[in-house]
Length: 612
Image (cartoon, rainbow, N blue to C red; front, top):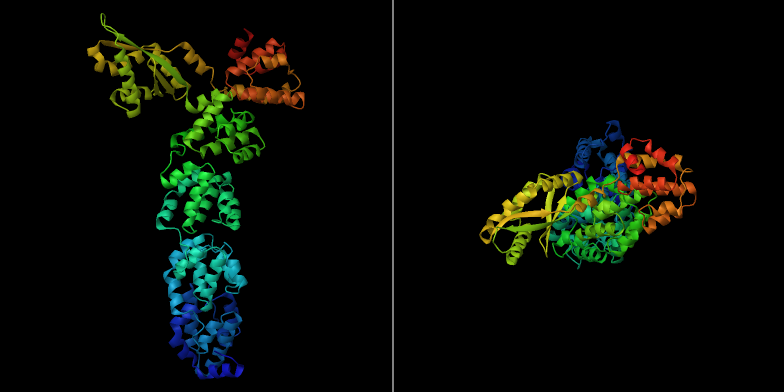
């Protein structure tokens, strides 16, 4: 090692530049870093400067160093010593003393073959698990293992893998002491599982191939359902599985999916214990349906593709039809929402934003949560929203007719009901025959109840409801059921089946149609004009179908104009029948000017009904 200036000059005089390069070319290609600093300092070497030596940014590291070594091999003998001295000085000035020592004939400081080979052979695994930004770069820079320019170069890359690869390749060009400095920094920043990759020592292991593969394969589905902000991040951070830096980075993303993706990718770089910790945190924060995605175990299932599609398709109409103030507390009581969900919904400004947030949260939950959501809608006077989401439901009683003279066999009715129930579960020939025909009309059998044979139909929409009514009134429904089920019971005297659907079943669903878009537009566009025209009185409110919370919202509004605005908004979120009810209420309370204004829009039939 060069200890004094005299010793150093002796080494520089004794060692031939060209011979050194020829002997150590492979080593120099491996350990020299063509950094910006080195290129700047090499300009002080007159021989290189006169020949215009420079490197291009797009060139590879090996190409840059190779061009430098080739040029040094061409130095005239009489200039070799001065050029070599200049290169050594440039290397030292740019923080590459270990490479300068090679030009001095000393190879002890460069990365050992063992450490270099470990880094090279483990590079792919290191890129998979090493996290440069979890405090590692800061720690290594503070210890002078990497330079500020090294850090800047690493941070030019965007992905984990690319940053990790650049860091490993930089370390491979450093002195041998950098290997231990790397493992020390990994241990200090909570990455002992990465140290294990390099040394095989320690009890912390990287994520197993099985767990890693599961997270990778399920990433897309996890991004749809995993909710980092439902207490999950707080629980995982408390177990020291992820760091505060991780949490801050995850929270820097705005969307649910992006946060979930970042969390999954963060866990994928952690020790194997992180997988179990994630499962436990999911269970603890009410996300067992996400646990099911990862393990295939448990009773909770993620929301089905069909229901997520329905929420997406019906999003605009549902958001315009729900009244969030009525729902949030009940959703918590029914176990559908958490306090985190409540804060996120109530943190929004407008009812539209609150409604959209509610649907976003429901879409990330389980099948049970969706059922709880629809039950809460029913409880909170949002039956029309349930019909919009699920489709109209109609119950029909199946009546059994036997041939003249034959006795009605109770066992036959029981067996017939069982046949229908079992067929619905297993999609047997008879039920499939009926459902295939009904499907073309947007109708399906969804349930067969005990007692008398009660069949429940689900209609896709109100157009399908009208089709079902036509099939019923035309007796096609009777014929369909008879043809499907009579053959098996003909020997017992079954002649035909008929269905009885009260008119009230159809009327009930028709009364739950969402408000027509033109009615909604009329109400909302009239807010300013009607602000001082409508008198909010107990008499008026008594004539409207308002739950307690809706009525209180109207009554507690600060001004008359705010009361009217709240009333019109509430009516616009109710079924279409509420529009006519509102017109009737205005007429009954002698508020004809307001009623007349609403009727000047193209709603003559509704206004005629109200007048009558």
